[in-house]
Length: 241
Length: 263
Image: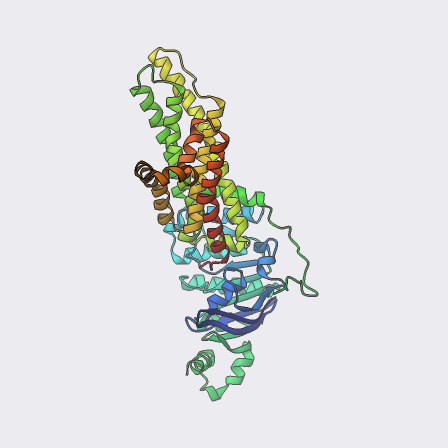
């Protein structure tokens, strides 16, 4: 379980994340939705210890991420698929993570098969990878340690339609087996088809959160029957007004 | 923020990552990229060329183990600091730090492991270079039909190790301080090539600089190390200039590395 409590991050006079609280529970996919610049990525970076909070807390299973003894075994993280050393092969990228976590060596081949990178592709340097292949490699790195929690920032970026469907099935299956998924995206449709719970962020603040079904019902026909997209636009543009 | 574990939270199920594991992974990372591979291959190639050049070009009297050692050591002194620099800066310039510091959130441990890895590689590279130089000496002298001269003492072998380790540490510290591959490599060559010339000019014209130079000029202090005859005062000079060039920037750089956002 992920618990974010009154999280705030200021950069000088600019408040990127403003008193954000939500939880992501086991067995559910929590969609983290918001327009560009809403503070999603900053929140996720603070959650995994890459940035620090000005105030507030973010914990995974009751502990701060940086206090986890071997975090890759408990939390799979993919924040930016293009943040990989381009001079390494895909297989070597996974091997580095596998050795850091002290996992058996065959875990690398298992992950390559799972994310659909062929032996030829995995022997190529990341420099020659498409964004979709980098996403697959990043998902492989996140799943390598067999974690119970996944934190993913825009993992569908660069995937082709087949890849997007594959990713959706993978996340659904992960949650159905009791895993916790926190999935950020600005693509409403992606979130709509896979998420159980929603956290909507606009200008650093939470403007809506709860089970997807409840939020959609509350919006109802009064919102023009536009579904999640209309709800999202109403919520986020309301915050901008 | 407290470190209290919430009631009912699962106890730490996995042992902490041992530093040894991070070190061996960091050693692997030095060589598993294309640039890492070519740097190492380049050292080997340059050492081979240097050995051949000494064998082919030096006079019979000049063809000694020391001449081969110096020739083989030179590529090491250029390349090892660059390897150390890239070990640190690539985490930022290639943005692989996003994964590295997510898997090991205590960034100080990663930096420590990189330091151990780079120093370890420098220490291991020197015996290899000395071995290559010995082979060169045997081959060169036998083809010239003269007896090999072994004129490098164990002490000066140790000082070769020491000066390579110092060079690696300077590169490493510049990497930690600047976190930019280009910036740190340029800074290293300014340090290694421009500053010594500047120091010579200053020492020639300014009396005050001549007085302080042994204390502030790490390469000057290091020069005595290579000669292999260190007095107590020279060790003090080395310690003082190392504190200035290594310790102070390392502390500043480490604070920034630990605090900075990784993006």
